[in-house]
Image 1: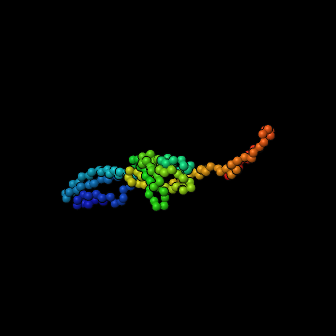
Image 2: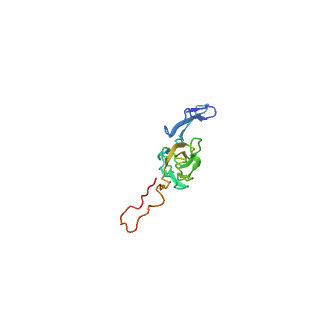
Image 3: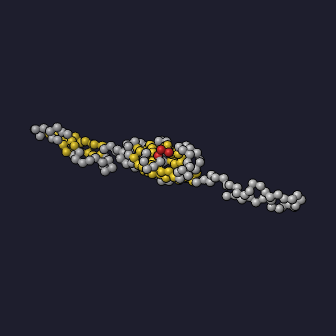
Length: 185
């Protein structure tokens, strides 16, 4: 610390850092022209500020969803840890990028639940990418890109390729005889 001997202003000569030193103690001395002195012990506390971004602890891949499984389904839940310093909770959001599909999703800012707002269709879009953001009360942010794969489902019924009529048979010609052979593609 330094002191201005004229006005008594004490200034810190280094950047205070709570993680290095949480408080300082120093003594100021006032002395008059006659040499009379008085001392005062001073304690200065350093307040800890939230300077560390939350850590996203959820995986980078959402569980796969089957195509045609419906809109507004929960596909992912963001989880984050903000215990590295002063914690006031975390809020969640989606980052809008030109390179991802954020517009196809919504997120609950409190729970981190991500919902696919459209009905997935493998033939139109076999996978989605979106970026989740965890932000603490001090504005420190962490981002993570997440991938959601869509499972291709067999949606087409087989086609019967055999003729629509069976061959005729004679009456009383016996049982257990093949009367038609069905074939399908």
